Every structure is written in C-alpha cells, then in structure tokens.
Image (cartoon, rainbow, N blue to C red; front, side, top):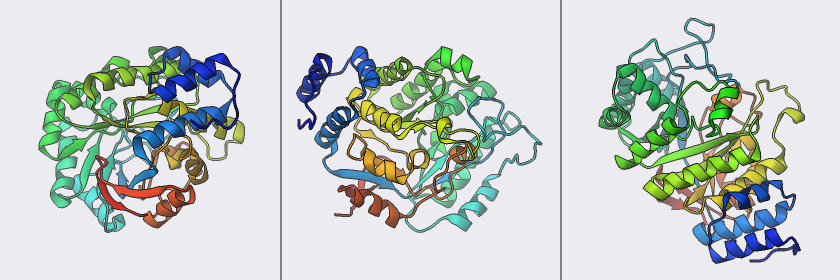
Amino acid sequence: MNVAIPTEDKQMQAIIEKVRAGERLTREDGIFLYKSDDLLTIGQMANEVNLRKNGRKVYFIENMSLYFTNVCEAHCAFCNFRKDEGQPGSYTLSGEQMIEYVEQHIHPGVREFHIVGGHNPHVPFQYYVDSLKALHERYPDVTLKAYTAAEIDFFSRISGLSYREVLQELMKVGLKSLTGGGAEILSDEYRRKMKVTKADVSQYLDVHRNAHELGLRTHTTMLYGSVEKHEDRIDHMTQIRELQDETNGFLVFIPLSMQPISPKAGIRRRNSAYEDLKTIAISRLMLDNFQHIKAYFINIGTQLTQVSLTMGADDVHGTIVKERISHSAGALTPEGITREDLIWLVKGAGRIPVERDTFYNEVKVYD
C-alpha cells in the first residue's frame, strides 16, 4: 500500500495493516474512519481494495428509469416524489401507457429497465404484475430490474401472499433483479424519526434474503446525510455485510447522498463533497464481501463521481434517460447522461470504461 502521508495514529496504522492483509474491519474500525479527518489515507486504502477486486475497470450500463405510479400511502420525510390519489401531478400508468412513454425515449442499446414507484393502495397487486408483463412482452431482451424490498413488502400486504410468493409471481412475468431502494438507514430509530412507515429493518433484509434464495441477484443502498449518526451508517453496512455472508446475493452497494427538498436549497443543506467521498471509501473498506461499490452521479455530480473512482468506487451507474425521484427532491445534476459522456467521465479519471449488463457481465471494454 502506498500511503502518501504517513500516519502516526496507531489505530489508523492498525487499520492500514488489516486492509493490506485482507482482514475484515470491525464496527469500531468503521466508526474510527468516519471520525478521522485523514481522507487521503482512507481513500488510498479504498483504492487499494478496489484495484485488488476490479483492477482499473469501471462499469456502467445503458438503462432507463421507469416509474409506473407516484401515488403512495407512505409519507417518508425525505421524499418529494410521492403524491396522494387525485392530487395535482399524481399519476398511475397502465402497461400500454408506459410502453408509449418508452417508445418515445428508448434508444438502441438499452439493456435494463430500472423500475420503482409509489406504494399505490388503490390498485391491486395484479396491476404491478401486469405492468412488468407488458414491458417484458414488448421488450423481451431488456432486463427487468424492478421494485424495492419495501415495494415487495407492500405487495405482500395488499395481496396476502408471502414475500416468496410475491417474488415468484413477478419472476413468472420477467422479473430478473430487485432494485436497492427502500433501505434508507437500517435503524428502527431512524425510521421512526424520518416517518418511514414502509418495510422495517428486518423486513427489508428478509425480502432480499428470500430473493437470493430464489436465485435473484439484487442491489442494495444506503440513504445518508439526514438525522443518522456515523454509528448508524456503520451498523447499516454491517447488517448488509452479514446478509451477504449468508447468501452472497447482492451485486453492488450504492451509497445515496440525501438531497434537500428544494433545488434552491443552499450548500449547507447538502452533504459535503468530503462526506460523500468518505462514505464511498468507507463503504469499500467495510463491505469486503461486495464486489462492486457504485458512485451515483445523479446525487453527487459527475466530477465528484470521477474523483470517487480513485477512492473505492468502480461503477458509475448508467444512462438512466430521465431520473425523477432524486430530482423531485432537489438534485441539481443531469436527469440522464449519454454513453459517450460516461465513457469520457471514466477515462478522465484514468480508468477503463466497461459497459455491462445488470449482472456485471462485460458487454464491451472501451480501452
């Protein structure tokens, strides 16, 4: 390991030695890293781990984000996407209407539909099944990465089916992977403070456990930067690390930087670049059993995403086309990006862009 600024801190030195040896970091190690201001050393350690796992390759995908409905029974304090039924701006699209939207915006090369939405109690579970079925029948070669664990829990409640049965019904019509949303911070205290009335911690983890047992590889997230403490973030990481030990079903971890409700919100209402980079780096160090850590340019911007590629991240997400959830909450970034810009972004960081599919199979290497 090449630590540019030697440290005399004994605890940091012990962590450096652990990382060199490939040993797992403890909860206490993670909390120490968050409290440290030595971002360069933390970033270099994360870079070393990433290079060991992925070399200089950085992944992206040609994908589209789709939202069938924004009507939602939940009232999470951080969400500005949701609407009540009948409220101005609320909508619930049929499969045919979504296909019409896709036809207007899709471009050749799209490999994945990233599908999330509100928990709309005014339509039956069958609506959500039929939504996927319509897309799968019209675009059989595009992978359906659909619904969060919180949505699966919601479907279970409105249908009376178990998590496993809900997943099996969705898999019959083309579901290939779950999105990572709905995790927020895996702390019941946090969920009470932030009015997260959807799936609780154990339910979120249990949905993914069931999905993994059925053979689905899934994604997982952490929405940071509101009321949680650094200890809560580390506890979040250790809980998903434990589930990954059990199932090895997660493909990637995605730290999501909290966005303020208003796009006009000032700098003090946003996470600092320092905090974003530190969280990505610590994620890479703590999640030793995850192959990939994603830098989500929608939330942190394209230039900070470039920097993160030398601090532990190896994935820059995808083209997206028209992102809505983060932008409804005040994101200032583009709603989408072209393949050419993603390639430029990665090469600009001195890395090798690799176009992938949902499951990180390489489609094309741009070296």
